[in-house]
Image (cartoon, rainbow, N blue to C red; front, side, top):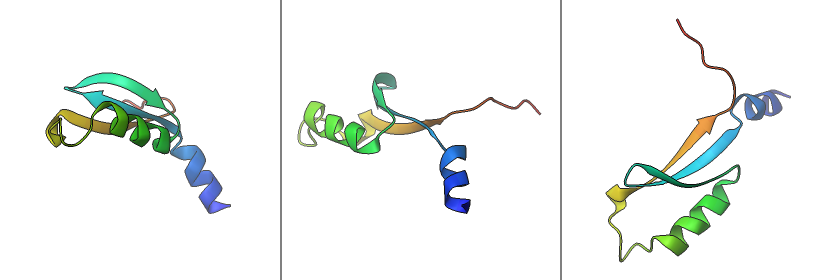
Length: 63
């Protein structure tokens, strides 16, 4: 039960960024990794230009 709650709390979308611009997004990390390998092969693009990030679902809290 604890793992199910953690998955719900951390649900969201994965973003593929190139030069700090969003190129694509998906709920599935495997899809993003596959897309990244297809669009940006390691031999042509430096690692520092490509980023994968997760945006968590939910409301933001202002403290």
